[in-house]
Length: 171
Image 1 (tube, rainbow, N blue to C red):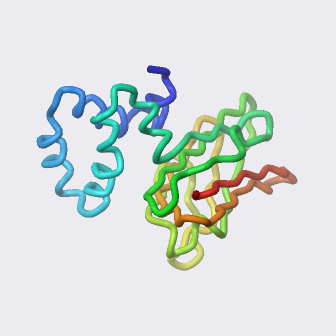
Image 2 (tube, rainbow, N blue to C red):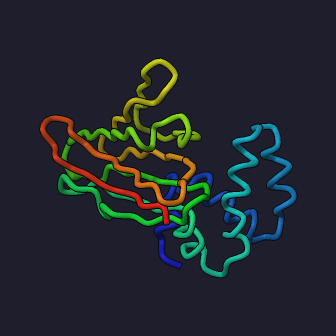
């Protein structure tokens, strides 16, 4: 297994989930997350294929991916997710210098697509809707959304003259 899956969410929730499922304690894991409401249930349902897979990174790619920001670019900048499914996009600022980035997306941050945004970056709101995410070096954002089949989701960084763009296609 490559370490890509262990980098997701800083190795915290995903690693905890993978460890619990690897021991066969899925029922105990579900019970411990029951108090966190629908988001906890959604998390367990989204990552259940990881428990059934011999290679966690293969299952993770089915539902989401990690995008790293390095050298003033998103890598990868083009992603494909299965349509009509819940998806997870993790964006990590891996710049060597003190370069702050933003994540803007009218498509992802719409109320009919967005489920949740968490992470170590600064999440800014316009009324009740996410307007942008600021990421300093070493910070990450985890975006849960519903990828509707046939839709394209654009994201970009225009902070301080940056001209970075990425796209997600739900097929």
